[in-house]
Every structure is written in C-alpha cells, then in structure tokens.
Image (cartoon, rainbow, N blue to C red; front, side):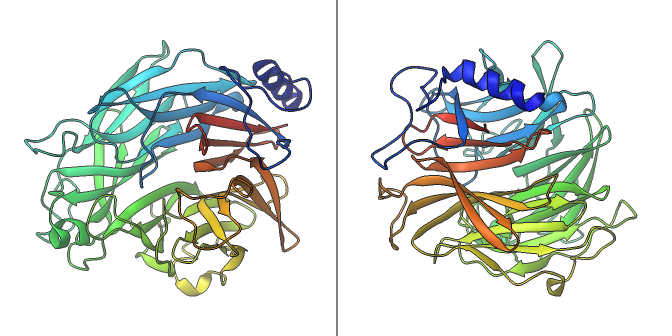
Length: 439
C-alpha cells in the first residue's frame, strides 16, 4: 500500500501520465541530448534557489517515521549570507513552504536525523564568532524542530578543551563543529565533529585537528575525543559520517590537510566499544588520494558494514565491506575485504552514497558519471554521458540504473520501508535541489 501511495503522490506532483516527467515548478522537464529521459524514478523539485557547490556537502537527508523524508540544505540569500532550510516530502508531496533553521556566513557541513519523538534535529556550524575575523560561526550547533514547525538552536560545544585529549595542541581553540554528523541513540543525540582549534595554521590547527563527540542534548552535553590528531598530526575529520550499528555508533572519516575544506585523503574507520564509552583506535581501511566529498558508509545487521569511496585522482570507485555485526570486529584493516571496483573507466564514480537494501541486503551506490572519457573535470562533462546512476551488486555483479541524465552533485541515497530507493541531489544542469523516488 505504501508503495502505491508514493507512486500516486509522485504522479500527481509531477503531472505524470507516462512518458517524460514534467518540471513541477515551470519549464521543460529534465533531460539533455543524451537520448531518452525515461528512468524508473520520478523526480520532485525541492528548491530552486541558488547554492554554492562546496567541497563539503551542504545538503542532508533522513527517512523518518511513516516514510517522511526530511531534507536540510543551504541556499544563498545574499553575497554574505546562507540560509539553512528544512523541508519534508511525504507520499510524493513536497512541503510547500521551507522552514528556516538559521542564517550563517560559513557553510561547513550539515547533518540530519530523526529523534524518537518523530521530530528531526539538524547539526551544523553555528553559534558566535568568538572574536574571529573569519569564523563568524565557530560552534557546534544542533537545532531541534518544534511541533509547530519552528526551530530552536542549541549550542553543544564552544571550545576545543571541552573534550579533553590530554595534549596542548588538541585542548585549545574555539573552532568546533566542522563537518558534523548526528544520530540518535534512544533519546540521546550523538554528534561527531571536527575540532579545528583556531582554524588558521597548517600544523597545529589543520594537521592537528581532532574528531570529537558531543552526546546528550538538548541542553546538557557530554564531550569526548574520539580521534586525537594533536600529537599525530593526522588532520582527522576532513569529512565525517556516523551511524548506529548493533546499538553503538561507528564512523568513517578522511584526512584534510591545510584547510577546513581541503581535499580529503584516505579512509579511516572507528566504532564505539560495548562499554558505551571507549572507542577503537582510528584505523586506515583504504588508501585514497582524493575522496571528493568523503567516503560513504552503511550498515546492515545481516551483512555488516560497507564503505564506498572514490579516488578522484584516477576516477576509481570501489566498495569494501566487513562482516562485523557484533563486538569490535572491523577495528583492524585486515578485517575488511579488498576493494571491489564499481566504476573505473572514464571520468566518474564521483560523490558516492551507499545504502543496503533492507530486504535483500544487497549494496547500492549512487554516483555521478561525468564522461566515458578519462581526464574530464567538473566543468567539462560530456552531455551524452553525464548521468546520475545507482549501481547495485547482485550475486557479485554491479548493475547500473540511471536516475537522471543531467548528472548530479552530492547525492544522498536511502531506502523507504516499501523497498523503494530515494535520492536527494542537486541537478547537474540546473543545480535545483531534487528528490528522485523509485517508481
């Protein structure tokens, strides 16, 4: 029934009666001279207002109760200001009016999760400047949605010494909250973030950055260092993603040397131990020269962890996995499989997003193909090849499905309870924020 409701709602929203989907805002439907524009996905326009395409993702999606799809995203509202907004999609209908969460001048990541109450919470870099002349926002902010659609901002962290690492490089500074990732463990919010110390110098700030965790909320928070980079100079936390696995959080991140938005390198994994307090040490599970927007991780209680990562240096997208469904397994590099190639011919495999089918346990990876020719960059994609695709591994073979023939930036993939896949992204042609729903 839910699948049929989604299809009917999407058809009404898109004006679909077969053939090419129409743009629900105005103008012609999506498509280029790539040939047919038929795909097994209906597309909904979420917001058409402009946004900068960052090296850190500025859009987030989560599936909540009753298959409510929550979407958080930034739009440019002036030369200096960006507005963080929220919209929901339910049964193929996009919420008519966006809800304003905050206005900021520095966009460095956003994450969204649903609380047990059924209301979403959004984490981002917010708060005040602490007298910085550049970091107009420098705190870890978590905004909670109220029942009437308004939002209340809470500041979870303001200083680098609130989570104590025990070394003077880590335990200093005011820039916390970069690239956050939020999940809920019961009523408790868990948010990991990059501590950039004073956000200025290559060694003590960026190479010495830490991955830290704030837990609790909305008003009372505890703080812990998860991966300390002050002594190791590992530039930890360039791009972060956390999820819940077997009742404990696990995270994947890369290294970003030299700046908050420097290209990411390598893939690291950690998970919290069963004691609910300590973490396994950060372990590099894959060597990658340029991760673009970072690796994508998913967890399935039957098959364990999977990680999808692209190396922009050679346009090679791979998938690795670990069958650690319990305990501290996957904390050693040898626990992970060898990389399974998903895309390695041409220019593509970009911005991967991974999810497991809850019924079949097969992995699906959404990514952008720019061109079947090698050596293309983001500004020179081939109109004939440009596409957003999902590759699904079935019986050891990767099978591609085209979602959008105009390509995409920063796709976010998830499954509904019906088994349908949903995909949030910015259109490669119009940059409109778009949601694709499997028919």
